[in-house]
Length: 168
Image (cartoon, rainbow, N blue to C red; front, side, top):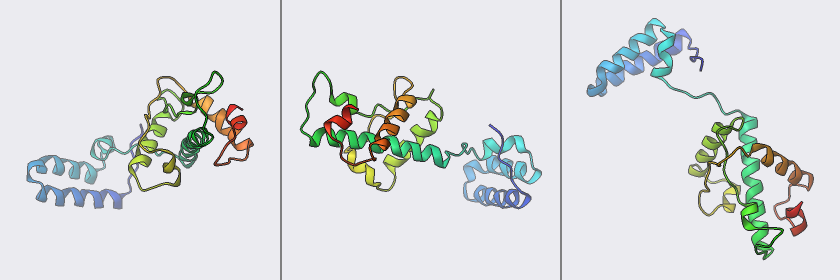
């Protein structure tokens, strides 16, 4: 990962914050003063250890994560509201969210964003999930999720689906 680029002003502000923290946190004062010096002198290789920040989870990845979570919520709610029970052609497990996989493109970001969402402020789609679902899949799943979301959107993205819609 590339080190974050910091302006002179940002380095100065962070260095001052580390110097203040060194006075407040005596047990870590040497480490914090070391970080302040690295920032003041512009040692870019040190930045990541000083301030480990992940690459951003982009808007499209966040949006796709929300769409997938919403779709599975709609599938489960529709399955239950229709009074459906497991049959040869449709089972509850077929409409259950199985998580995201680290090997999928952006899988790590999707897992971490989903964890954040389930810890964070209420979202309308959270009504579909009485508890936090398992968020890590056993195998890559993103392509099948994307196809499912596309089909759901072709059907109008409704919050309630018919039996036929679910089977589609």
